[in-house]
Length: 382
Image (tube, rainbow, N blue to C red):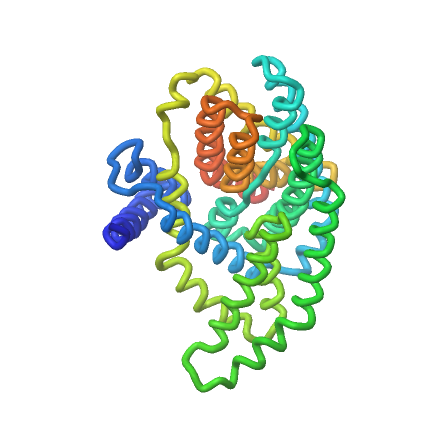
């Protein structure tokens, strides 16, 4: 029953988050791990149902909307060069080494390229939460991570469309690119001209929380059209948050959306990642799972860090950026689903890669915490 499952998730997520903080780790790590415990792999209290996935989707959309509201736009502009380098090298390194790994385990060229693309994906929703907890979301590293995530998403989806068109799937590369160009052009125009008008129109309505409702409408509309254009919904939500942050309603919207999100939807999102994992298929290929997990973590960490270093960041800051790009999250899971459907992934390799995505997601918060702690210690010593 959904109500009981929600009660179990919220109770367990808050307790696990608190324990994680007491142990010196970000709360999000506890929420991810408790999802595995609650899910079919361990206790079986919570099932990975369609309705839970929908609630989880709302959670990640609200999380990225809040990240947009909190973004320091001046810092964001200053880190544009770094975001570009991080986004590009954060794809090139995992793609190249992922392809090599695919060839080494006997995959065809198309399947090996697909594996490389899957390892190139990034979802920074977990990093956003960890950075928020460490009060680093507005830092230059946080801004570079957010900017790189947008670039990463666009490049990976276009590369995926290119691969699909070569393998005979009904995908037209020109149409894919055109849809993305149209989306970003329209989204920027609406963010600039329409969002302030919508909020001003809703503000005087004689109903409760009209501005908050308007902000949610904007968030969900941007997320929907982003997904329809082949861009991740979280990117649309992030752009919507940025748009609202330029209005006089920013603080009111931020405080109340944060309350709505973190009271129910965001904890469900974090916990559902663990719930969705099935270990049975992957455990038959334990060494492949371990090797792929190590490859996934190191290629993104090193590739993104090199991009940040080329942009002039210190090594400590570069590795902090690299750590923030490690999590593959829901973006990689969507790509893996496409691979299974198009026979570019076998069911066994799909099961392995789902666990690899979970591993990258779980290691990201403590990795970020450790690197930022080391960075701060180095700065204090200097």
